[in-house]
Length: 112
Length: 471
Image (tube, rainbow over all chains, first blue to last red; front, side, top):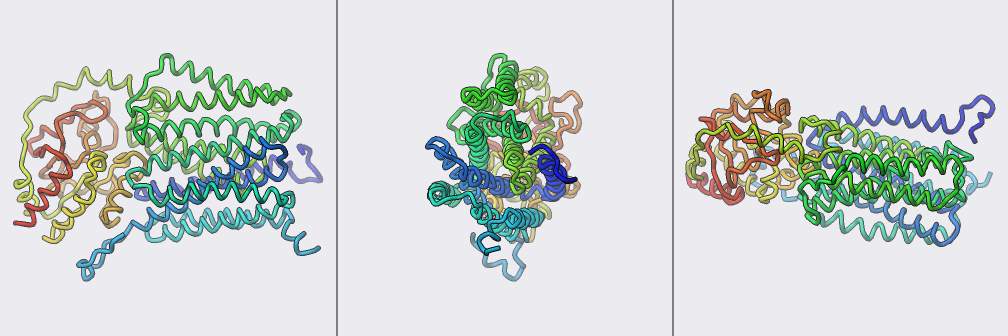
């Protein structure tokens, strides 16, 4: 797996290229998020972190034996908690952020 | 090529991953403004759906696997949905700590399962072995560290710093045990016990690293653990050669790193001093030189504050964690509405560490229906204090301490603060004269322009509002 085939880089190098580029993109995108939204940002990245769910799905295809499968079912459950819980709670938080109502409509305050 | 073969093709799955992480990045870039953020979150969630569905096309998955996957996803949904629906906004730091924990735990478990699937042989392919060991260590530290952080925030464990004798050496020793066991496995040992030793040593390290850290340092801890879980996912992604995991993990890692850095700066502390020391040592050093401030404190009444406010043009409210503890955010919103009804401009000055996690105070005020355009960040509002008629400090202390700006020998010197002392009048709502978490006296309280309103923040604010409405 480490050997290069026909001029293309080894898979691990391709992975590291992607890793480094993702780090730059991540820093660029996240540094533009204002302080106001840092809590939803954290819960949102928690949700994206739930991507480890995919690791569980891939791994369970090759898993044999009770213990291996049991470990991975827990991992999948953990990942799902991140995904489902993270996106839901972020949505709940973000929908509370409201602009100042127009002076005309100020009499009736929208209730969350 | 048949249709099934096409969809199960690795290239097709990879193309789906490309779509998925593009959606993550688009979604996150919409988080730059509250107007587009809700949509951004939905885009990212859709990206996740694409990624999960694509992975389910993996040719290796059999019928029994799908049953297990359904069980796992079912359990996760049953736990995650009610938790997300019912959590109180004051409890968000605990919630995020818990999410960090399960994320790190998932990575640690996957790396263990992969180690077992390889029959313990990680030495023949180090490109898989090294990231797998790394993911196991970081994942396990995050899981246990986050659980302790959760316990502290939830009040299950004492929030004050727990001093561990020779803690630094113990932690370095534990890291050495985990790394050493990992090295032995990478060099050819196929011992199951050694891998478990990695997980256990990292687990103890996670516990011992977070236990000594006090409650007020939690913003830094949560952000750091957030970065850790991201990096562990990226490492697992390299081990599994899964592009979606690498990109998403790295983005989370970048986010956690940025937030950790910002929080540490806002508290004027290095990340190292938070993670290695707890706050214990520095407090002791502080107490010696603190008591010289002296002077007299003027206390006032709710009725007087109401009159003062009624004649103001610009009022800045400075909320601190004390306001959240007193559950006074809705009462404060009533006060700001009453002021606006009289044509008085109201702004909220939010210090980056006003809550227990980055941006926490903004969420609490948004929940109380404070419009986000009234919430001002520190750099933005600091220029406005000089034209502020009344600053109302509610449950905040250290973040308003002018010593940070004026007294080079103060332990908080250099910490960015809200320049409340520049406003014409300052009203400080406080339970008593006790000092803030850092144990430092605040000369702001002794200024000629400052008046103290002692009592429970919620009751005081309600009283001011009712007095104001009668004027």
